[in-house]
Length: 114
Length: 115
Image 1 (spheres, chains in turn red, yellow):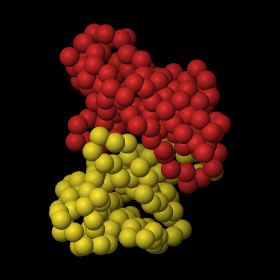
Image 2 (tube, rainbow over the protein chains, first blue to last red):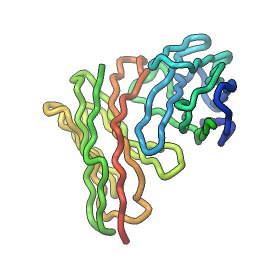
Image 3 (cartoon, each protein chain N blue to C red):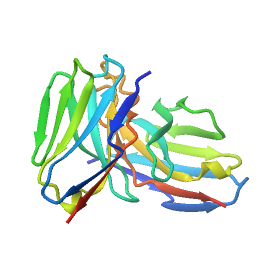
Image 4 (cartoon, each protein chain N blue to C red):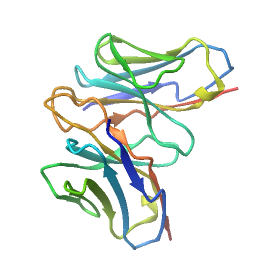
């Protein structure tokens, strides 16, 4: 069966520090991968999605970036964090090349910026 | 692009009552509609989904209905239990032979089931 792993589960970072969040998927190949952010008590904001290695689409311009160095690895990064970057970051995957497939979420990373 | 509106934003029911959450979408080409449940501090989990060629789908106490003409779909939970308390999200997407890129989510409904 397929599983998705995200780490770390929680992270406290000072303003201006760099960020690297990692997500890996097991048990499937060529997945679509997604990064979402969820502010407290709010909905899901799609940040990036990827349909293949090195292929990244950005939904919201900001100081975050994403990379997909391997088929089942998705990384969210920032060079200098802002206070507004606080939130719950969720990675998700879906099956590619088949219609009507839901997205499956990881357990998320709770990021607090001080 | 697609826009999904979800109502109500909060819903409080007594245990055993039914709960209904409604969503409307803007893009008539959308053809896949999943629903997610998110408990406090946890990840969203798929609870049910429906394709546009189906009008209704049921899974035990949960059902989803779709009206393509009116471009709205609803989640129905019967015999609610306290463990149904969570935030529920509807979503819509266009699936065209592998272009399953994005889901557009509603803003969520906080359901509280009072014992």
